[in-house]
Image 1 (tube, rainbow, N blue to C red):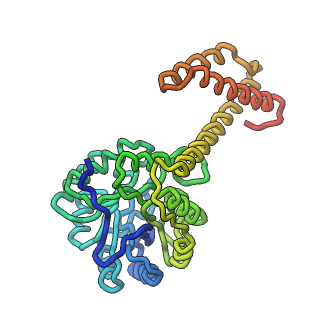
Image 2 (spheres, rainbow, N blue to C red):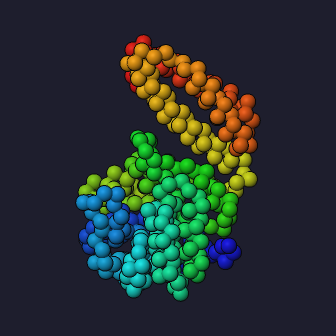
Image 3 (cartoon, one colour):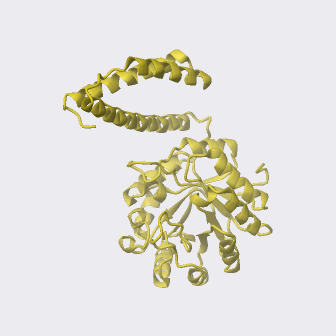
Length: 359
């Protein structure tokens, strides 16, 4: 599988790393599209992205200008000379994009999570030679991501790449979508010739996070970036907090440090970066667990219950140890970890009972 995969390229463009794809989250007005495209082009950006159809989490938000916006992108191609890229989610979207001469397509996270939708898009693409990028599904499921890529590849699309936009999660976090870098790194290990594009706008969710996330992606060997850029981000009709102006984008790109040596999963530096990321995720999970422990402490306080429940503790050690062994780890190792976690949970519950800590 993926033996005939080809790098994404366009006539007349030197597609050297990093590939930069930029433009507004949504095509809102013809003036906004043309203004943003002109500014980006003046900074050397050659591939313009814009959302024509916008899958929104809740109804009532701006769901895209629709086919009307395709004419605006045709103007960007003809008058500014940029290649244009849009998101598609249905057969009708693909057909309209192909008829309008769109140069590249991407498939969003909500769509890539749906095998039926992916197959519909793949069937519509069969027989066409157009580069396609597939975002990771909203949930951290590598097999689902690979399956989505396979459907497009099986349709004869060999200029195929993957976009890492992070993974949705419950609760408040630094990032809008958790990066979980080990998942795209594993995708690269399995499909070494698959180009990886990072979407720091959707991972970060805040414009101040775009620059550090972009650098991190470069440090991890990603092939390019797809960044949301708007001529007036504060007035954007969608996702205004994560968009940057073309001038700011130019600064971010020019400040990137590009490592010349291609890194692989056998590279010690990259492996250590993966460990650092996983450690951060472990700490976030431990923080969630302690929060629940404090809530339990509050419940025990209100119901005059002792902090330590021996039967429950014994059950946790036994079941977690068994699960750890089934995963190939030492049962004693897992039990030692759980004992340490339990001690900290008890300490925090005692703090709650003593009114020194809020749940």
